[in-house]
Image (cartoon, rainbow, N blue to C red; front, side, top):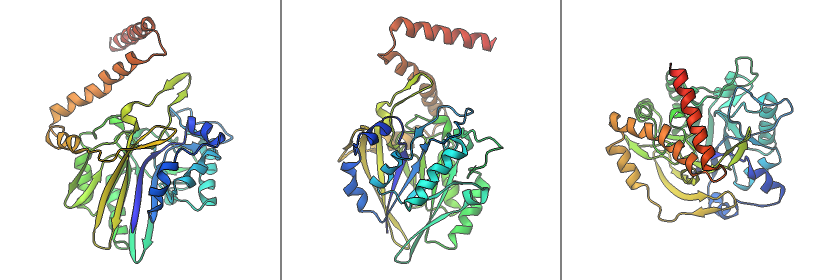
Length: 351
């Protein structure tokens, strides 16, 4: 059984305009995706509803039911919905989205109108090979779903996940975890310090494959006890966009992604990564692209806590400042004025 796993699928921003204009940005990928028995991806943009948006959540990603037709272009079979944008457009938007999925034969998991529905696994089957998928969202990604919401997401809780793995393991050949996690290092090219420890703990308790999302970047992967851990596959597709008067651009790190192709047999599996850059209007194949240096740096240095802390400080403070200073839509004088104002406000809060 061949299964393609995709990263974050966000049909937001310019994808809405392109669909209205009849543009197919996925044309160069269609032949590759057709080679799979199943295509599984994290659907991170939900259609607009008629009851407003979740004002507790920022930013919010927006698509339309019409633009969701792009999911048929990429041959999506399974949509993972346990992510931090599942309630962006309240119950109405959620129902519009899953209504489209149901109508077009796209199965989904990780969220539903009840906790029971949200927690259900999904089983893929071909030639007596059974793959069980479990989908969770970590609270540190800030879904901001209020207690009064009429939908539920499948939240990550390690004890619950282990019980789910054990229960599912009895009925399938392989258990795959789809994890929306690593909220503290969103935008980072390496996982949070404790993620490798958690991933290995889950493999020790029966998980066969871990596929991560949320960072919007491709992150290193590693092998533990013969099982693969892909911390994040990056953005399968994602558009820059405006939100509440602020432009949210894509940086170079946000455009690198990989399609993970897994060939499953009953007793084992073989992975292959196909790298590309998401140029929004088209996809650039990166034949021969290698992550060996990044994987080596991750294994050799970033598992040392002091070095990881230096990386984290750079990610949280240096990189945003660098990106801000390079913006060409704001004059330099205004940039320094904003920086000074921000620092002054922080000093007052510290006092």
